[in-house]
Amino acid sequence: MSAEKPNLGRSLKAIRAKQDLNLTQLSESANLPQSTLSKVESGHMSLNYDKLIRVADALGVNVSELFKSAEEIENQAGALARRTIDRADDKNNKAVDHYDYRYLCKDLKNRLMIPLLFEVHEVAGSASDGNDDPIKMMNVVGERFAYVLLGPVEFHCDHYETVTLNTGDSIYVDAAMPHAFVAKKGMEARVLTILSSSNAEYLKLAQETAMAGGTDATDQYKEQASDR
Image (spheres, helix red, strand yellow):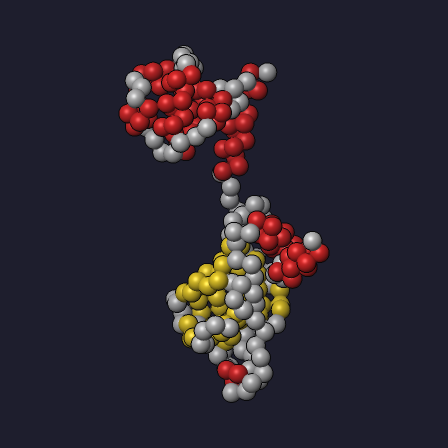
């Protein structure tokens, strides 16, 4: 039963630690004696409403955050302490258009970033090859950062001239702008990209797609949006 009760001392200590504050700093910000805060954290003292407000303001949190149960504190700490590891020999590449790609660290739920590793091939008969055949473009609901692990690679997009990126070069783009990576003729390239989106609905679809090993969720998102 005690694990379900609010615990002011543990909550205060957990929030303070998360913000990397020591007792002296919090004491100065809240204008309360350090000894008082120490007693609160050890469970030997409580605070009246006025002092609770001062502590909450000093920490930049709602007063209710100071009254989490022990179980809630542990669950919150566990939710923040997340990690997943991909090994270099864990090969599970998919193929689409002129790419072989692999989602990285896809087992971590509720991610804000979606990393992918692209093995980029040339596009025979493309404009970069001296012809006028179109290159298959990507467009997603978000932003993309790309770092060239092995170049050179051409970056094509609708609104800018084609640019060649060499090994170690990087680019950050509005990924809703149709774009593509294309290897030089007779060569292969490797690009690490990270996708993020402020659109929560799209990001959730993209996370689910990544976990399932599918292709980009843009078409699915657009179909759902058009049905509404």
